[in-house]
Amino acid sequence: MGERLVPLLMIAVLAAAFASRAAAGEICEGAAPSAQGTVHGPVLAVPDASSLCVATGVSPSTWVRIPLDRLQATKAALMAAAFGKNATCAVNADGRGVCVVEGKPLAELLHSPEIVKAAYDWR
Figure 1: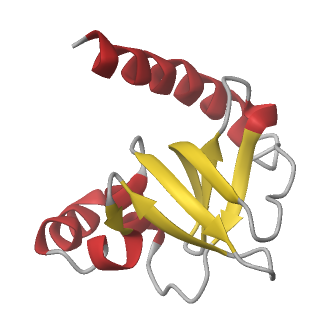
Figure 2 (figure 1 turned 45 degrees about the horizontal axis):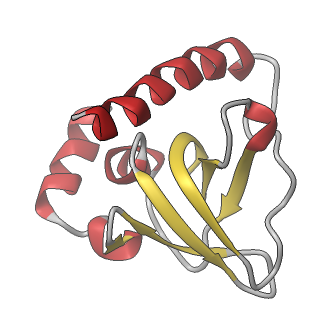
């Protein structure tokens, strides 16, 4: 139970920080991901329909924007599939990522009936 509580508390704190910074511009303030590297952490923001912000630390200055590679989705679908969940994103030479969210490929999650419904309801 404690193992699950820590990420939830972290999400709550970071979501509050996100809300205060959203109007100020860029949400993901961390350095761009290294090409051919991997980024792991909770998804704490979905700035648009083609990228995720993965937190590698508590401060928004450590939130890394991951431009998604060849993924067609809506912002609502990305929110439903990834927001608040742990993701591991492999970054290619072009700086674009392919992500696995809680053990499942993001591209696969986006087509699951429950995510499609949640994305529709998100509007």
